[in-house]
Image 1 (cartoon, rainbow, N blue to C red):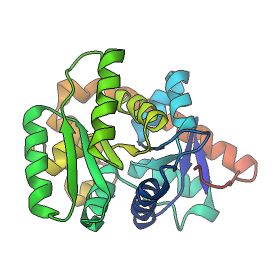
Image 2 (image 1 turned 60 degrees about the vertical axis):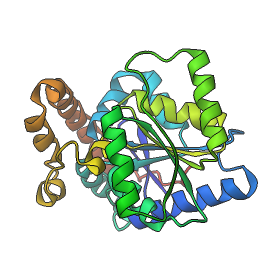
Image 3 (image 1 turned 45 degrees about the horizontal axis):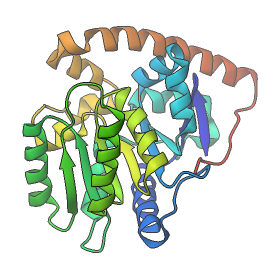
Image 4 (image 1 turned 90 degrees about the vertical axis):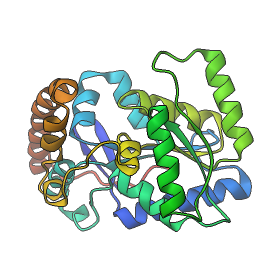
Length: 271
């Protein structure tokens, strides 16, 4: 099921169902090498919050990337609030499907039989800490590769080499932590090039590795995670949240007004 907020069409699903979906898609890839839609070999999964909705309004090219993805989950609490209010028939299933939570759930459910995980993103030190954390917390999860790309534009030859490393590793799930919007572009590229489930999980690498603090549960539930992160990194995130939140509010108002004026368009989920 889907519900649109602004120019982003969200896949409506519970967190538990989303984690199962990742596992099922990865198992399907391991079995027959086919999972995506539109002829692509892989499956592209995006996580969108208020900032992503705002960015999609500003940048049609970015909106197109999300539109072409197999699934776009509600990464932020404010998104779920607006979605439930705009689409009452979907309210029971419209949960926050937070990238770090999905990553932990999938790792926890992983066994020696699969899926096989590849980590793409983060600094070398964060990546090393993340691998140590996964090995300690999720000993049955198989991490078959990890790389920290250089902080610059990647050349076509480097992307080809990256694809080769991922393919040779045997990974069926690629966790991408390159930041927005870069990670969404890479998720779409990977799904179009390789038989993998590619997921853009933002700051999940830092949170799971313990290199950055995560907002307390009460702030997350109250839709205030952005305020915690802004206070933690005001110089880096100031414009993102102040501009993004303003645009998101305008998109939310448009969505709610439209929902009151006509029946909510509900369709089948992507993929």
